[in-house]
Length: 115
Length: 111
Image (cartoon, rainbow over all chains, first blue to last red):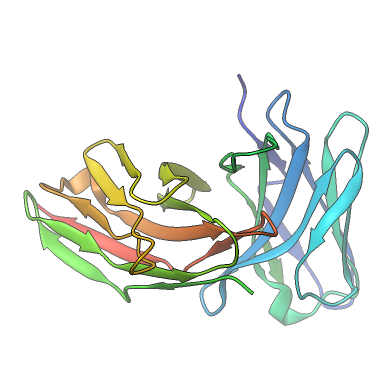
């Protein structure tokens, strides 16, 4: 099976712009999560989608949003970019089982730099 | 909410040395526990997991035992290799079934 694919791999944007990141999960995985990774804050949970519905949301401002399509692919959008949004954004997919927590499978991330 | 406290790094060891990275957690319900590893320029990869008390997860020579009484999930390896150099993350999945990660421990193994 192909792994989780994230595009683009690198992005450079200017303050005030908006950006959309894309994620294709492993085939058959219907849950997609997004994380922000920075040297100072570590890995912070953004949100998780399952069957096109947001299941969980982390403590990020409303400028951060996401969606999931019927084929389980997901996009994340950040509007009005700030310098502090520079980070590695990681997407992960998993199967959601009823009784056991299945592990997350991560993509290689999108490195966003805001100047 | 759930939280993970992980041994601060960086950790530098010589090849064939014994490795321990400490991890303790707080979580509601009956959490599952995970160790992930991140190599430079890559995303995180699952290293091992344990889903109930006293379970031992193991993979590639790494081991960790789910200790409910001490709320710990310490990572160990008997003999590290240069190729083990990476950042290691402990994670917990609690009642919200959302993964919460520790701050990560940078491991460098010298030949």
